[in-house]
Length: 79
Image (cartoon, rainbow, N blue to C red):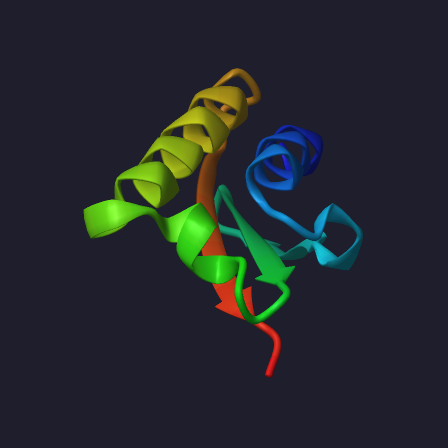
């Protein structure tokens, strides 16, 4: 799941070297993934009305469902 999210996010941003994607927690069948980007790149991942972020979450959930899990993706920007 982390690999899938990382590939998608790095393709969308201007500074792919500053992207970090890590699994922060797993409990009750849910995997929590944290995505951190450069300050100007968070908007590119979120997209207009959050459509790109929702698409990333849908792909991550589809990948997690193959393992019988759910996935929660959190997008943050470095200050």
